[in-house]
Image (cartoon, rainbow, N blue to C red; front, side):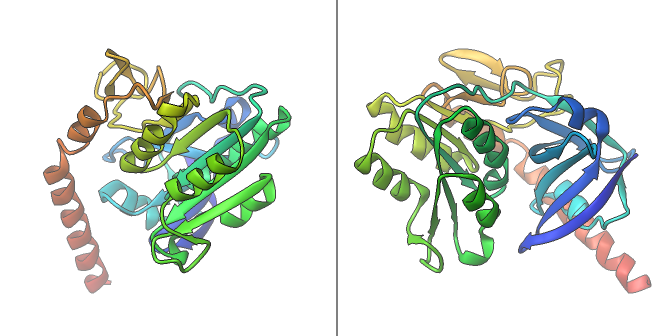
Length: 281
């Protein structure tokens, strides 16, 4: 069992968890992920790691309640436990002395880019961050990123914080101002695609994180296959980061929608069961 030490709600329906996982914390590197299971009947889902403490043996995760399993995790409290936390999985973020780097996070991706930014800073890069959300209330980890990076750009759709617009608007402003040598984008597929479309004509190496459908996380099932550069890759063992300029986004979006109806039905069932349980309490 992997106990939840702390639970903090950092945005609507979004929690920051610190959990006990000493063996994973000992080996994890920025860019890697874990696969978790709440209980013996639970679904296995991948989660990006937004922080770790090797000495304390803890991992930090951000979970946004969207589907059934993420709602189950959101409902967990400090003192509760996960049955399984498997990892570290995937290939760590490639880090070297690039020059000026821009890390872009949307939603949960704002947490995932924090360890990457710290690693790139250690290698003497200039590191800018961009985080975006629909409104100020939905921004995640802006304060932590601001403290860790050279500069943080904030965008909101409604202009309630930072620049009004999208993360690509902030990226364009940076690109217009100075040369950029490396870009990483983590978040919704449309955002990662838009970033890649912007940097490709400029020849700027751009990595995107593809946490697509995963089951076992070890390359055995093939559920997370994606096409990158015309070749079939498994995001769990070859990724999760790939060159954003080579990803077949149309195929990726289609695969993400394959189980939409089943996911909706599973969430409705869980919420109904939860309501019945509360009524009986």
